[in-house]
Image 1 (cartoon, rainbow, N blue to C red):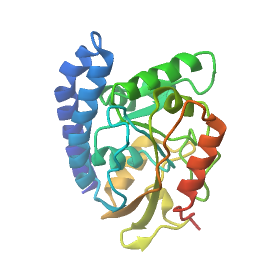
Image 2: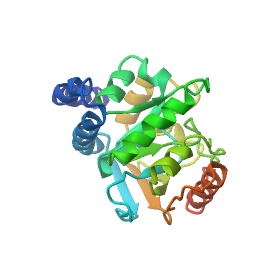
Image 3: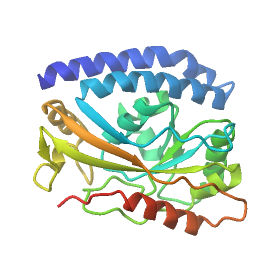
Image 4: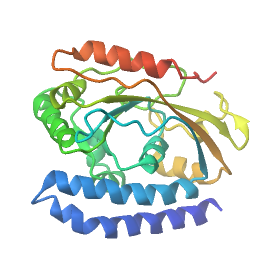
Length: 258
């Protein structure tokens, strides 16, 4: 069954690439319009992929509308697995901020590019101002942008301190910040603990393909997505305070893995 799902996943990804190709080309002429189109296509394919991955999502949230509807929202969430992106993308079109290393990773890099991702160089601050400017422009163009401020996926035992710099894009664009908490509740009807978390979580130096095959071997994942009170930004806001407040609100709904 796992290998059959792997074949079906390959077909989904192929269809995804084919449908995204015209808008990927559009990116050479109008970058942010192309990203809007690519995130919409990725959203539609993510809804299909969610079923293939046997992920059932419990939503303790609403599609929050900002007072600034013409501006995209900066969505911040804790990070546990590549499955997080599929779960959040299935909710609606979004561009994800990921590392430049991911852009150059075979297969995963191509998926990210076809999904209209934005990139940051986490090993160097040399290009930070231009990266923030890029995210700011995307938000100003009405694109919802997802950031995982821990800057890495974790084993679920805690939520790391949030990296602050990218919160500047919300201040500069006037975007609303939406804190979302991801809790993986059950795998194959059993509560998620330290004993079975690796069936879903992808962190540290785990290899992608063996983990993906393992994921396809499971019968069901139940994941809870909870939104906290959103944060309206002002030009006078401070990135440190925004990072701390966002983390606090995500922690309010988080259940550490034990």
